[in-house]
Amino acid sequence: MMNLDVQSTVSLASYVGAGFCIGLGAIGAALGEGYTAGFACEGISQNTKKSGDIMKNMLVGQAVAESAAIFALVIAILLIFTDPGMVLTLLSASSAIGAGLCMGIGAIGSGIGSGFPAGQCCLGLSRQPAVSGKLTTNMLIGSAVCQTPAIFSMVVSLMLLFMDFSKLPLNPNWAALIGAGLSTGLAAIGSGMGGGMAAGSSCQGIARNPGTTGPVTTTMLIGQAVSQTPAIFGLLVSFILMFKGFPESTSLAAAMAPLAAGICMGFGGIGPGIGNGFTAQYAVTWVARNIEEAGALTRTMLVGQAVSQSTAIYAMVVSLVLVFVL
Amino acid sequence: MDDLTNIPQLTISIFGSNWVFNTETILMTWIAMGAILFFGFMATRKIDVVPNPFQVVGELFVGAFYGLTKDALDEDMAPKYFPLICSLFMFLLLCNWLGVFPHLSEPTKDLNTTLGLGLLGFVIAHYSGIKAKGFGRYLKEYCEPIFFMAPLNVIGEIAKVVSISFRLYGNIMGGAIIVLVVSHLVYELVLPPLLIAFFSIFVGTIQAFVFTMLTLVYISVQVK
Image (tube, rainbow over all chains, first blue to last red):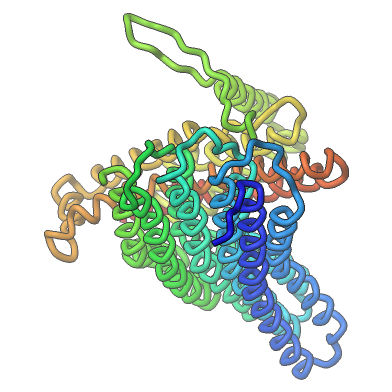
């Protein structure tokens, strides 16, 4: 067994974190961009005259989807090259791994999600070239809101990297910092994808019925916002894990409780995020086709999403019990 | 990172209990309120067929939000809730945009502001629900689908307040953290103004709209 000093342990952890970060972070954006390009091909084959516009729109949409991977790239470069300028302790090693995992996993959902509106927008342009302005604006709003879970992950990663944890005791807190990364990162997968589904069907709806742009965009924003609730619960659990400052302990069980809290909230958030996305997707589709019932559709969507979200609430309750009761 | 976790506070001891005031948040909230009062005064001072610029902007807000309120509630209930919805949006929009100006900061960056506004919407939604349906039917809705789901329904209602307030706080605070770290890394060159424009103006507008619409839809779910 090699003997490692603190400096080399922290460097080692940073490299591992950077590897996780960009490796996992590249998954989502690539999938989303491929989806976009596929629909761009379909659009061009249906309306060859507009191939220039569709191509331009495809590139803009892919650039937004790419931003999730760029966030991961930024965190990976920060992990490899920067010196936070603080006293290094062994906690810095676990916060580096936590930051890498958080950003890497957190970029998956937003990358895939941003691909949906971009693809549907390319298809919509071939169907309704006259409303290209409305379609592109709606796509940009929808896919920018899809990036919110990735931005939450980036915030948690930056806090893990640049906040000074050196005064905290090592034993339970190393696990709390990794748990903080996993909580937001995993919960962001579902929310990113769910937000993307809502945005995709809103672009489709506007292409079908351009007169409904206002209500469709409003319903999309409400649906996306509710789909992001699991990511917000993940962020809440991460903040609690980072700021609570667990008291020193020698037992391993004390360390596993905060780690389990992060994992529990993270995995618990994936399903509700995608499920809420399904609800929002169909609500937006039918608002576009049946504009008179927009109010009733929005209310039903919200009630259905609240029920599907109850599983994320169970996960949050268990996480809070793990943090505060045990 | 220090100036983010360090919130300026003023502690006053009244009758043995300590009252803590977040001075910066309160000051910034008052600036936003003052600006809205000034706007309202200018917009309604000389109402004319040929409107002044303030009146035009005011009419745009009123027209757009009256339409949205009417869609979510019905014609008969819209006039009652419309002033709340429209002023909530204008206040949040101004709060989120304050960070663009040097030396000012967003009051929504403080969780106390967003949690307060979230609780406001929660109390109003439930009060209107009880008033519209009667206390018995209001209580009965917690026992759906089966009576032992009641505790989970209560937790679900509380989680709505948590999610609505953390959504706004997380977006604005997250933007502030990203701007702070990036400014530090690029020595305040080129990037920070663009990031501030994105997070304050674009994300701030969308989140103000989302917060307002969710408050409106929560009311509409309760009264229907």
